[in-house]
Structure formats: structure tokens, C-alpha cells
Length: 142
Image (cartoon, rainbow, N blue to C red; front, side, top):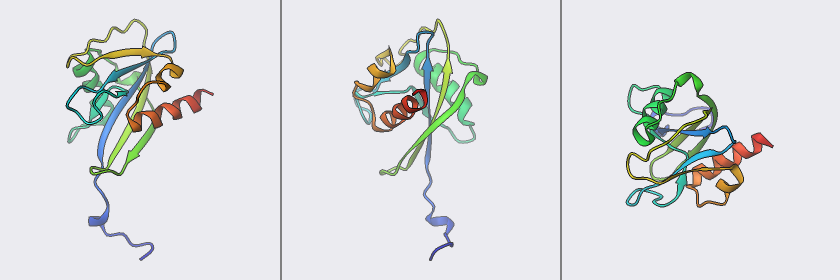
């Protein structure tokens, strides 16, 4: 029936946040998914899940600190784009951007990371939603 939706029919999305962190040379920080995880070996924007009761921006600050030992000021984060995946677990991924010079990440979980120009990043094997977000970033810059 058009116009009537039952609340129980609305999917519950897992909210995930990610960061397109740019350095002073216009490169983007990417990390590689660790072995044993979904999309293992693929490159992605760093980030993670938003916990219950947590605001997305605060979740992103926490995740970046935990994963890469980078302390971010939440006020330096700008909402940019989002992507959706309707797979087994419906996900909405919120992408924020920030520009920071002199950042030195450390892979706290042993994950590889790299700085890449957008064209270099496009040539990497990226996780599907991250590829969609990179394309949106590239479209915005063009």
C-alpha cells in the first residue's frame, strides 16, 4: 500500500563513520583491512562503528584514536558524503573530511596505512563503499 509503512518493516541500519583525512599535499590517508575481517586486504577510509548513545562525530574521533593513534578535534571534521549497503546487515557509512598537516599515523592493530593522491587511491583495491565515496570526493574536487 503506497503511503503507509509499518515501523517494523523499516530496516535498522548499522551506522559507520569514516574519515577522508587530507595532508598538506592533498593526499588521503587510507588503511588496509586486516586479515580475517570482511573485505580483508582491501583499502578503506579509516573509521568504524558508531556505538549506542554515541554521536557520529565523536565515534569517528574515538575510532581514529584507537586505530591510528591520531587525536582529532571534532570541530575539524566536515560532513561530506554517505554511502549505503543493503547486504546481510544494512549499513550507512557517513564520510567526514578533515585537513591536517604533520599527522603521523600508527597502525594500532597492525594494519597497513598509506597516504595516496586521489588518482593513486582510485587504482587501489578498495572496499566497495569506499570506492563509491572516493568517486564522490573526486567528483566534488573536479
